[in-house]
Length: 227
Image (tube, rainbow, N blue to C red):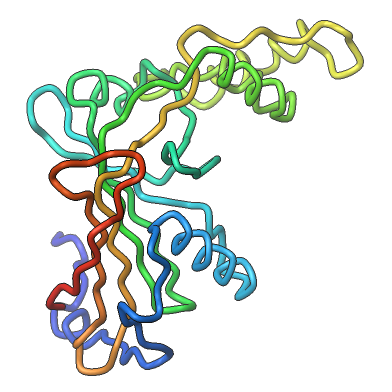
């Protein structure tokens, strides 16, 4: 029996005309972080579903790329912060190739933001502070899940979580410590691209890039890219 497949013709006909807004160099902030924060607040106001979700793309030791959705937990002049298991697939990829790209897609606004740069671990204290701010169930989950490893079944995972809940009940004054294998990364951007959907696939794309001789007070170079 042949497995059902998507109708190629139907897929080819799926299209949407973008016409909500335009994007011009004269309209954007001089600093890409300020521009990102402006768009992020507009995404929140538009009630975009999980505006903080981003696709994190990495390359593993063999050169194989992979992507997954993670949540941004902070952005400032130093970069973009997110948290994960250091022993996970993405953690191993970042250890081998400490560079990444993240992509935000806000279809309700017909917008996309792509950010690239070098990645490094944040300080233990920063990771500790964030870990303590998480709900107890999430802190226990960081211990229960050997992220990206093969496990026998769902029940195996639930038993581990249950045992941890019994060891660290909500009413207890004893908090679970932060796992050594868990913490934060900071992506230090050297390129931002802001994409606004337009009619006839003639989209607006503005790229911010650091000049060749970069210093903390240097201005970003802003360029328009062909769609």
